[in-house]
Amino acid sequence: ASPARATGVRVDGTETTLEADKAADGSYTLVDSTRAMYPATGGQIRTYDAQRKSYLDVAGGPVTDDVPLVTSATDRFDGANTSSGAVDAHLNAAKVYEFYKNEIGRDGIDGKGGSVYSVVNVSNKGKDYANAFWDGSKMVYGHMDGVPLSVGLDVVGHEMTHGVTEHSAGLVYLNQSGALNEAISDYFGNAMETADKGVAMDDPNSGLIGEYLCNGTKPLDECALRDLNDGRNAQKDYEPIPLDIDNGGVHYNSTIVGGALWDMRKAIDTELADQIVYRAAQNYLTPLSGFTEMRTAVTLAAKSLKVSKNDRARIDAAFDAHGIEN
Ligand code: ASN
Ligand code: ZN
Image (cartoon, rainbow, N blue to C red; front, side, top):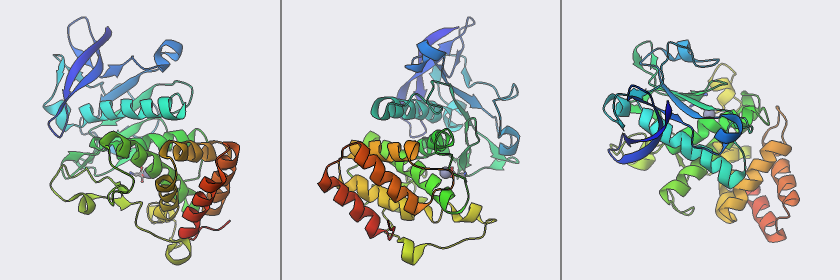
């Protein structure tokens, strides 16, 4: 087998080049050996098709033999490989890899050039599984109203960032540390998507998460799962939620701190903001950190990056506006 280019048709109907692998029999698989990690570690971007197996049977541990690589008899990935979400997952995983490599200077999820695994087309006991998740080893995607979750670069960036966080801050996925874990995933996923789509930071839709999952059937703001511009405040809007509901409301309270981070990205240079959030998460958080600790971490990261006094005042204002105190 050898690296080869293929063509993919995305769910929105556009065509894209895909980095793939061509076998001796002329068939192609979604294995990308072109990234910077490959010469050093053999790291690849590999995309698999669960063929509607239940997500619980796929979750946890390395990909098993009964979940095959996405395959095409020709150099064109379309039809079932489009509707499964495979084309979008493979393309978006590469975009996320390149963002982390080029903008942040991180080599992959583990930071060591390890392979990046995605599994598309899981079900919930045969019905659509309307979610996506990072399972500790790989990204797993289902379908929402027939649309694969992998179409959203913000979703793919979100899930891959859970992997990055697991390999660094290790934020426990419960209560405030879980909401912070969610916020960091929302922040980077959305940062990647706004850059990719050319959405300006002052666009009122810039904070929307998952807004492209309806594939044009609904207005973006109605489609979105969350909005980092929802203006929520830790003093007024933080709700302690029982652990058995969404791990203590990790997807509910997340936009409070995510909103502060997004406001900061609106107020200073976007790439500088990304460096600061990344450095905060890498160097200054511990597994049980919450919102206040994140403010401290961001402040320390900004100082260590020699961020100007004016920008540091803008960062303080962003946290103040969301009721997150020093
Ligand atoms: N899509 C969700 C997330 O990544 C799945 C979950 O609850 N872990 O946050
Ligand atoms: Zn998440």
